[in-house]
Length: 401
Image (tube, rainbow, N blue to C red):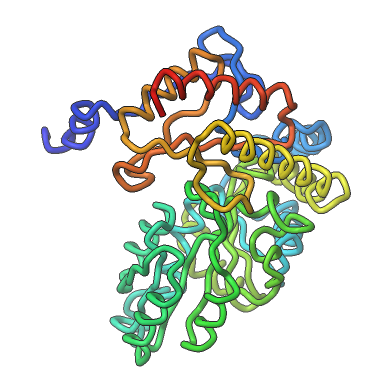
């Protein structure tokens, strides 16, 4: 039994165990209450501020009245309520695919997809065994790591955004029948895009299925909010676009968007879609409205404000002498700190100064590369941004950064 606690004991010993602060208001607002004190929120993924948008809330209430709190089962049973077909359709249109399969969480989408592609039903398709290989960026999200493990396919890691390393490893597996390449579209801890056009060319060259996890891109980047795929002009060219509803769209859930035939395959082969309850009607109602806003003129204005806020922060962090991770093309603004205990103490001091943005550290990023991942929102005002910068100015002096 004691072995169960080795990980948590290690975290405590190293002084890097996480603290779960209780937020006493909606955690998606620029201003929140923590321990009875008003602080500024700079760690929410509610990029466009849609979580509490009046139109989104109104549509969620309508759906709640009609469909109740939960779906009552999976989409194979009683959970296939009509509003989910509309959510699938709106999602596909947002990211530029023929169809989409929606799931209760983004984690479930990544856990579902790899087994469904590489080994849908063990024993019935024995020709797949030993022939599948997944090429995954070394910094891909933990849900991708878990999904690959559950697929029973071989996983080959390529160096982060390193095209030559990816191609070298694709060449070694050129005779394998079933190949898949997966990368995130926006790597939020690194504040940068993946080189999607070049990876797409490699996928075509080596006949590999290409999947982009665009959880942090959908809604936040691209002219109409179509994410990193739209940003690079690749709508309709990527085999699978995975995304989540809990970031720029302000809700909860995940999706796998693809061509019609592949989506139908995922509906019946992705086990979480069969064995778990469907997305609730109340969520679907709010999400449909959020997607419509995202694609509208209002959405364009919100993305413009989000980008302006991120640019303002990056410019002023650089002026203060901080090392900012990434190239400035995405809204996330990671401030590099380094050693874990220092970033934890720094985040604690920021909270004392009225700024909530916890340390982003190992195992989410490599050891010794911790950072404060600042996530601006379109709803942040200039006074919020200036307060953040003043607080960082103080900790810079105190921590001799």
